[in-house]
Amino acid sequence: MTEQRSITMAVTGAGGTRMARYVLDALERDERVGHVDLLLSPNGRKLLAHEFAVAEDGDAVRTVLGRPSGKVYAWEAGDWAAPVTSGSYPSWGMIVVPCSLGTVSRISQGQSTSLIERAADVCLKERRRLVLCVRETPFSLIHLRNMTQATEAGAVVYPMIPTYYNTPETVEQMFEEFAARLLGFVGLDQTDYYAWGEGGSDASTERAAARSARE
Image 1 (spheres, rainbow, N blue to C red):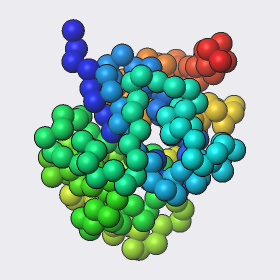
Image 2 (cartoon, rainbow, N blue to C red):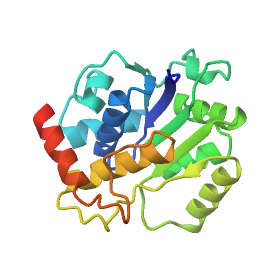
Image 3 (tube, rainbow, N blue to C red):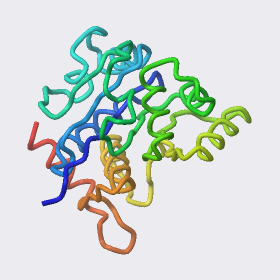
Image 4 (cartoon, rainbow, N blue to C red):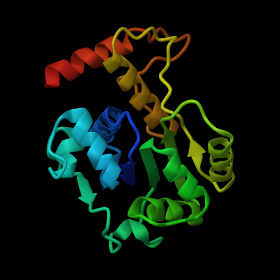
């Protein structure tokens, strides 16, 4: 039996928090993932409340995932006793989605001023995977240099850019495809995303139908 992973996922104050729901949903449903530590920045909470039209102080897991989950545990932004602050805590790594460029800047400079940045710093020092799904355009030279420095430190910059060659028909299909490809990138290969030359162009439609059936 394959050992289940423990993964940290963070949501920061960048537009596109709806993508976080698709990614967390995919992680929560994946049997290879045993536990998810969910971290929300204060501005991440504000944007989640705005984009989902919910209370800002509501249950974090229900806000992001849309339902309760025994696999996902949310930590308060100011809880410096959270286990993700220690390198001794067993974790596969961390995904930040969406990731603000302010967060990238602080991570690249080693400025652990929040729980999210400290958890990211732990991933870098422990040589664990850190994936930063930045959501911004265009990039200034400062942004590019910060992303370069984060990459040189061991992080992976994975912009929230949708695919187009799978000819998505809805925004939801774009979200589904991005989440599936992101999980595939971190070693949790999905069977239902488009792969060039494999006749997978109908996969996004099938996923959307499956989601509708579940809901």
